[in-house]
Length: 466
Image 1: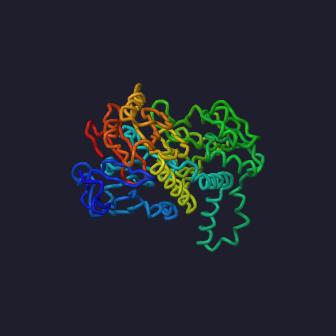
Image 2 (image 1 turned 60 degrees about the vertical axis):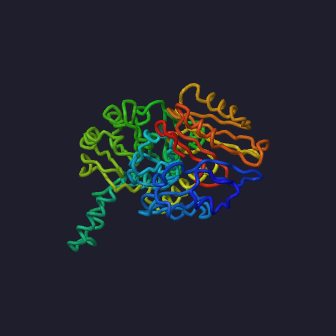
Image 3 (image 1 turned 135 degrees about the vertical axis):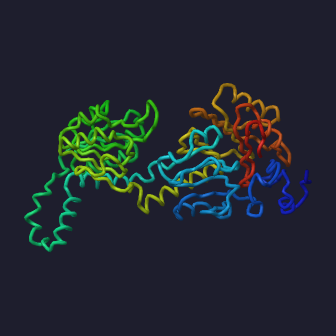
């Protein structure tokens, strides 16, 4: 063990497994880097005292700028990041082998997380964050555009005028042929919104301003979301009753696999209740719609299907408009999603707070009390774990000032603020952190005490990784 009187620079150069750092009027002693440095990657590129962020895809500079360079080392593109403490990505399909053992969190700049192995991350104790609502306005605007495209044969008219232009007949036929592309107005029509979250609510408000009558359905509607809806909206108790008599139907729900999921939720049983000429807007996920049943509806009537997802059965239908996946493809949406993801990662790394995680419980935290150190524990959501954790602190003579314990699915998350004012000049967490981390059922732990990148430990199938 190195003496605590060694200069900080010398202790870093020696790669000691023990690190001391000043914090308020006391020092914190944690273990960091037990074993071979090859576990952590390239020591020459390791920047002690900074959180390392690994990015996949092109992340908006607006978002990356939220990481202050004094505390964060952001690795972009192919830059070596074997010591990454967090990962930011957009559409990259993340593989488990791309996630270093040092990784504490993953954030996707977008709403869906199908490109991240979420279930496996839960097993490893790694929270996965998304950015709900960041692209809501962009998707809303495209959905409103979709209603116009479904009301007036604009695309067919453009193609027709291009053909006439090639023949030199555009001026001659521009008035004569307009009857070929008649349509209808949105004002006075009924819109049914399926899914009343961020996007559904915005679509409803904009449609109301266009003079439309509103119906809506969302079995998981929260009080918070309900308060954001137009007061004129008629809420129904089923999808079938929501789509009945609707001129336009917008689906804005997540795609969930499995027996109780949403695959093909807009199927024959729902489509059979569409009124003649109904327009279905799908800017959520292609798999939500049963393509075969939708094609039968389009074949039998003058209805429309507008979507920005590919469809092997509908792409060439005269009553379908299939766009590229443009929903969130605006500069503003990308900036906002990246900024939200970066802020979420910062809050988690620096304070332990959790917001917008798809696999961990939301955990809002008050400020850490004066003269305290924050300790977090991730464990399997099984009985008896909280008692074992608190007993470990008591056995080490640590006084708990405040504690939070939340759970979601298979994961439980604990935040414990430990008093320091009666512990002397050095507060050692080495022994208690190893004891807690190696409890059967614990996945990882962190000591958040002021030095970025340190204080993290994991239980890797019975092996202590710190």
